[in-house]
Image 1: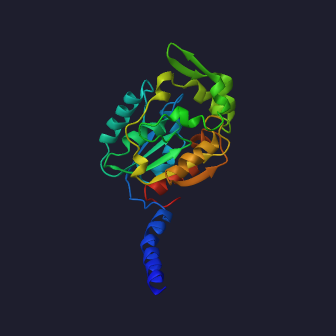
Image 2: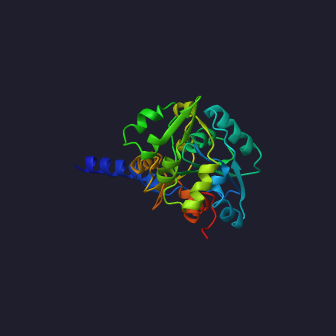
Image 3: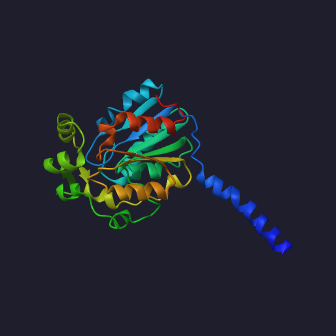
Length: 256
């Protein structure tokens, strides 16, 4: 019995560090730069409420103007911006932009990844098939496709994409809605940076574009530090302080 008891204790001691490590919050490396990546049916101005908060905290902030013509084009646009950064950088993405940072985030400059109601595919994953395990958001019914590009109808944009945003601001965002290639949604990454980089996730509890339970699934899968916001899909517009604070946490800066 003494032998088996000793063996059990030894096995328990060996297993303990693994369990503790898994439970730890990701350690933030102090970053001086933040690169923001917007998603489908949007442009860089969707980050305009978050940017001043990050700048006031002393961070150098750049919003990528994501071309949304293909995954490859969008990845290259973010890589170009990332190459211009001098030192440690946090990548933050909204919605489809999460696909981009999952690919680009393996760059040595990147110290953390922040997903805001965002996709977070694994390498070579059929993300469309994965998403079908959850009910589709009502915004999907408002997708209008013409000549290989898509936009959201005004009704779907205001009711389900920008729900929770002040009506005047929602209409401004609808006016600058960027056409998005229909093909990008099926694009597959060859990397999944969240396997090796600390990750944070902001779930939008009232999201009408990506199912909130799908967002929770993605956040849990990547072991992300997660917050939940009483927000629609555009939490970066309706809840900029909370989103900015999550990015500041990822950048190793104290919250304001």
